[in-house]
Figure 1 (cartoon, rainbow, N blue to C red):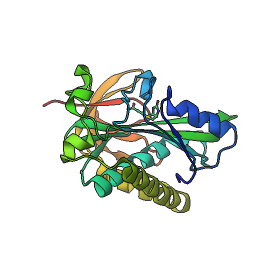
Figure 2: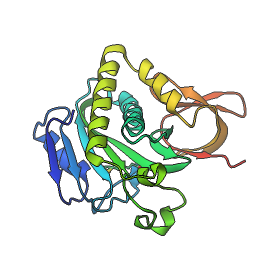
Figure 3: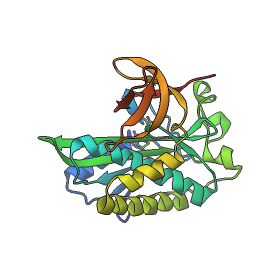
Figure 4: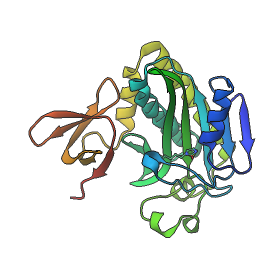
Length: 247
Ligand code: BTN
């Protein structure tokens, strides 16, 4: 992964650039990186703050063989890869909030957006978008993000070598992707659960349809989060947001 790299100075969103390359037949592992994004996108149509030169804004082309409903597993796999890379390369311990926000002491340092192009339920390719707030200083965050986001630099107290971190993410991705293709989702799910700050906690789940409270107990075989609700039922959550209960 990351052997073929397209480096951009400025772009709207690396997701679009990677998508275009994938449409043109780019191989699995092709990576697009930009110094700056003017229209960085997050999950659920949110904006993603991606200022110039401060972070790692990149998108990776994947060509999985699994059916569409299992692409959530790749989202979780990407979270594990980034979490491990941040620990190894920058020495900062983070945890994962389901599905794939990477947090340092409760504040977000990285977001992941996995998008799939399909044809008759078959996955043509996926684009794994990774946005790491590597070297942002306090002032680089807009005011409304300061309570909820931080950077690896602020967390670790020193400037992050972005090239080394990118290489580390790529090598972790490669190792985990191979593990996943050879042994399936289970070993990846165990790694995810061990790095998760969500499992074992009381959570509030917000889905498109409703909101409920319960205890997060782990992942099911598809990568959905299992939450034990007040009626003692184990509910699989396929998409939505987790709000930690403030008790
Ligand atoms: C989220 O936190 O909701 C996901 C954020 C994903 C951001 C990355 S940055 C590189 C790629 N390009 C984008 O526009 N988004 C992703």
